[in-house]
Length: 95
Image (cartoon, rainbow, N blue to C red):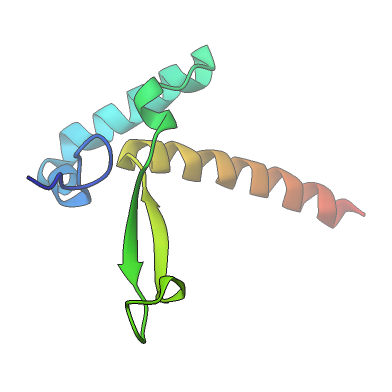
């Protein structure tokens, strides 16, 4: 049986089904991770799948790999990237 979503099996559709709960969890969980500076072990793994490109699929070069990560890990990653980008942009504009 194929697992939906990433390593944790969570999909964005599942998270959208109950937005109130999802927002509460996605607020508390990354906050705890940020404060403890400890990322869950499940978030350190990704599920690599291959996707076909155009052309002869018998050739290895006509496939590409993508890594499916837990959705919550992507949310935390986006928060971190945004914070870093905003800080860097502010400092770059000062010069």
